[in-house]
Length: 66
Image: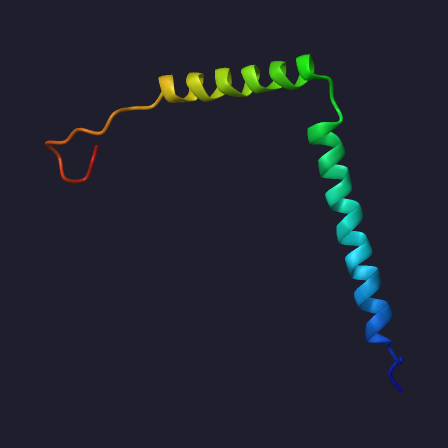
């Protein structure tokens, strides 16, 4: 015989787990000093610039872009 599940309790448990996960993300994003946040932003921008610097431009003359 199958186990009886109370949907109300299951929904509340699911929502509570989702809220905890969101809280972890918020602490990681907002729980740091301003200088540390700015430093991580600058590092991310530097990584993006380095990646864009290695990007090959597509040749508009060739339809396949190679």
